[in-house]
Figure 1 (cartoon, rainbow, N blue to C red):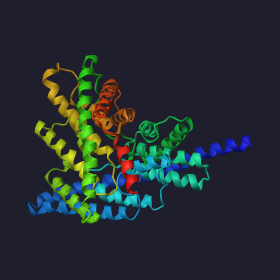
Figure 2 (cartoon, rainbow, N blue to C red):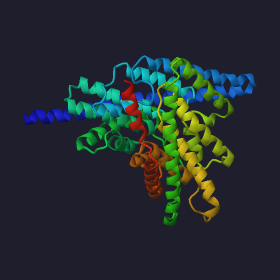
Figure 3 (spheres, helix red, strand yellow):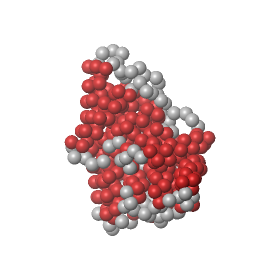
Figure 4 (cartoon, rainbow, N blue to C red):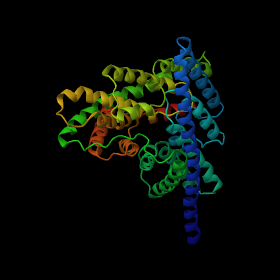
Length: 427
């Protein structure tokens, strides 16, 4: 009996490794498709701009059609719309059923079409959801017991996040800190196995480079920690406002019962397309904007404010289109904008040679993420792994602490808790 039990335990890790490879294949393919969709969209926008005034209607039509098509795809499968992370959390808690087999193609196709058309949504939500769906199927096909199958579902959701950002440690912390709120040795080991194989396979498709490379920065002096603390406080307030706007926009759209969902998605897509025609940096997941800010790229103060305000509104609006798409990547871009603005405000008071705008952009990314998701260690790990810098560890931790406390004191609940409860109420 003991020997059989040990074999069963080993089988769970073998299933996790094999299924993790499939998560890497699917997630890597999803990222590859989105990268090429971005290139195609950029080319279309540039050619449309060369046509003059009438040409600017092309991005409007493109994004409207993409949003409508993605919404139509998502409507065919329960839980295919939106991020999907709240569904992964609900399944772990036993509040919802597992994933139907149709979820994976619906999430993949709808995500590529919707995000690829320029909506302000992230790739990570769909990849997490698809990873968890693969874990659920693998648990059943591998004939794992109920406990191991449940853990595998969650572990491969974390592997999906790791693939989305090439951040294996971030994926592991996401499982423990955000999805489950607990550290179980067996769950940790299953997540490690699934994450390692998933990221390894995905790198064969998208490469092993950093997602958001930034120049090497020296560790800021310790006396600057209070500055980063204040950056975290303001980021906490910004994140609380963003969470409220996401939920509020969904509730307003819910009351538009006379408007079909696909029509609503098309209208939202048209609005985002109009922004794209004005400036592509205002739309999309935000990786190009984040990379530019982390590289110290120059944007005027006015441009930073406009980007921040527009993306602050466009993100929740895009999420209300009911297409597959996540919230993490747009949050990181918003944080990079806020951090850069914070540096611009503090710059006259800082001595020459102290931390530059890139350092503040990285800290802002983690702080705004933490304020909304309320997972500080995940935020720190994601930013560190995506940018490849470890010199900012103390500023990152300081700002994330301040952001989490500030958002909590303002009465802002973790966004995915709110989205999960909303999903269950509407089920």
